[in-house]
Image (cartoon, rainbow, N blue to C red; front, side, top):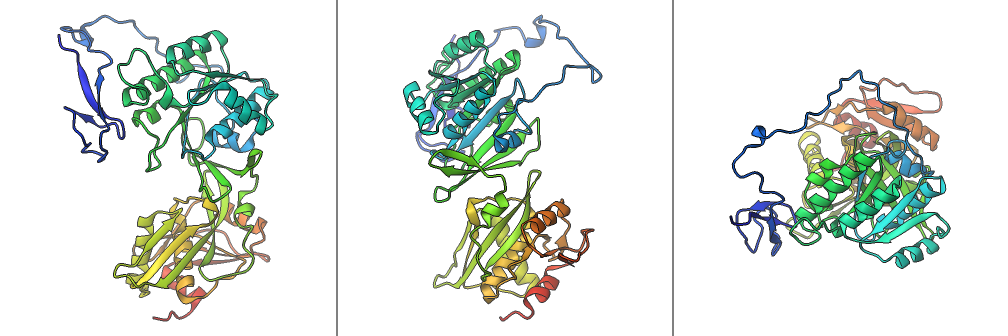
Length: 456
């Protein structure tokens, strides 16, 4: 019988019936490889006709021993995990090359080990001596972390089964090689098989496993998306190379809130925790300037204040530029359309630049009103008061929609010295003696309240 095989794109994981030079799904060249099937299955019997082992069933009232989270002592790391490490969990960490993934995880392994949690760091990219060199630079040379430089998955699992550590780091999943899979390391089949074996091992033995994943140029974790479904937690390590801030963001967490963030600062001694990110993101604001607005946002369970910066200038181009850093460019196009259609404020013939200061990335719609305020402020050269924060979602009709956790946003603003806020009219809080809250119902009312008349 001919050997069963398939053709898979290493870049996006799309399956093809035959080899081709270019993947039709993602457009990558020379990325399609032939891979042997993991199993051809029984020749004549269906799976339903074969006798298997009956599994044990339980119900929702079954009392299991509660899982006790393990704390690392790195509060920002523990926060993103949902309050600590859950035994038997599988965690996938992704990020751009050089952003600091290995540094962060080495610090986490050292923190766990110093608190009595046995930790093993397995690297498929560095020698053990290179890891020790980095540990010495970070001041972690005395931490009881055991090291290994290996890519053979069978040998790694055999070692972990014998040692029984509580915390394991695999750096990275793309370098692991399973000898029962007929393809090169880093291929879709190898990544899928290695992730499945490691995740299953973590569940069986109660060992917490962290898998480091490379990312594509679009910022997604390389390899099949099924890997993200296998694991319990998916974390992205974000940041701009020109900024010292790094954001650890959970995008999936079965044991805690998703979209929780931890903030770190890159220093010569590694990554330092930032206990109050709002104060750090706003530390360089000296005086009010046009195009600058402070947005009171929510990341997971944490209120975070960030500065939104806009620049509007006459464009010499037939198609003006629309450049965005840290926000959704499609959302910016929507805000510009609403301003022109509902409020009569046109940005035609103007270049528009929008930036979230500090390398932060914002995805929540509550930033709409702050973005609109920054755009109008830059266009009119009209600074907003320096003690004011702005938040609210804008609908296509120009109305200001309700947002969540308004009280937490306002408390964070008051704690940092802000004394005024503009928010949608639907929130229930009222002004106080030391904090002025203006509640508005639509974008036109906001423009009149803050900017008065607008020059065409």
